[in-house]
Image (cartoon, rainbow over all chains, first blue to last red; front, top):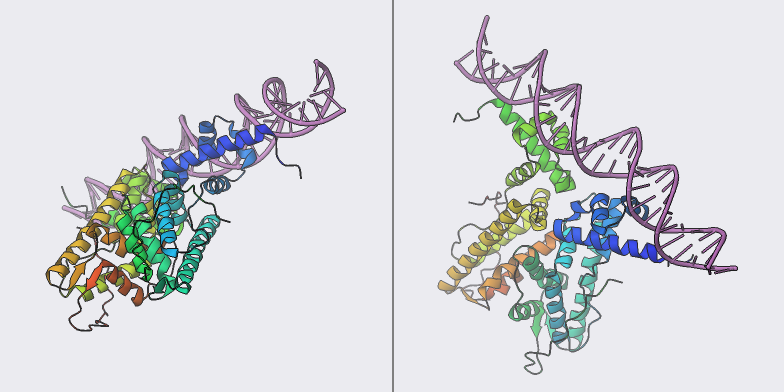
Length: 207
Length: 207
DNA sequence: CGACTTCTGAGTCAACTTGTCTCATAAGAT
DNA sequence: ATCTTATGAGACAAGTTGACTCAGAAGTCG
């Protein structure tokens, strides 16, 4: 099929999605209605209906445009890599857009199976990548994993979620260190304190 | 003023609040409208308006009826006490009503200052009680607190939140042990493993 | 450049929801 | 037995939702 290259379509779509994202961020999911989105996007109400007949689809599409942070493939040495990942995750969770999408996913009403699905996908993606990293670290002799590795995501991501959702505030490097220690016993070859951490990672998207 | 002892009033109020709670649990905050609540409560729509002219007040009142778990005053020895508290908290977070209220609080739209307030109150209450417990344990020589104690709530409650909100599943006793270890180094006088844990605590309310 | 195709925005319309009010009635108080 | 008062049914205006039409603008292509 011919790619929808008509500039009018893409312009409308972008404006509408941007408006929907703004509304989601500022007032939550219930504010994302055809009428309000159309008004904010400076677009006719019918145009919104044309592209998104169902309002919930507009919401999920708007959310899909917000890149959710998650882990990439792990690299050795694992500890500094993981430290960087957690730092990125913590910083991302502080962004209004990401926070809004996170709360929407968490809320994930039974009425919205798409949202529930996406939430579960995010959770399993993060969990799998995190466990892969820990396994790699263990194989490399860097780490002796403590306890059930299935608890690792909860132990390491949970506190970041708490900071983002319930108790807003910055996540200190010290706290991230403690998250790493929660994974198990690290056999630091050298006191690799303060690994270089500079690049403010762009958000990454799910596969 | 004369106490509203009219049985009709209390009957209506209870029915309405119960219906509101059901709707909140099943379909989330947007489902709590006058019309739907009235229909489910088997009550005239006007009656709901009479008691709660504003819909958001109905929502907050319905939430207030769901007791949120938090910590009581700590007792020595602290470790088994804290273990019990975390177990209760984890179990409460699995209850649909409590979960629904938690997600609603977390979502805490900017549109609803009452909800934001209540969320902050809950967070500070839990945080204060938890820190008090850790301080007590340290004074009793039971524990050497690690790192910044302000991070303790995130480290210990966060994982439970993760399990409740993102990655539904049971919280094992082993996981709770690891949460306790995240607080610092416990100087166990004796191997007080498997402390008696039987009473399925009733939910407690905030002060 | 000019003819064509397609998207847009304004508007209309019925169905539905929301918030307010009225009133006969039945439940409770005295 | 009588007086009070909450209730439920319904009427009502105002606003929202979803669906449709249509002239005209924007973009494409010969």
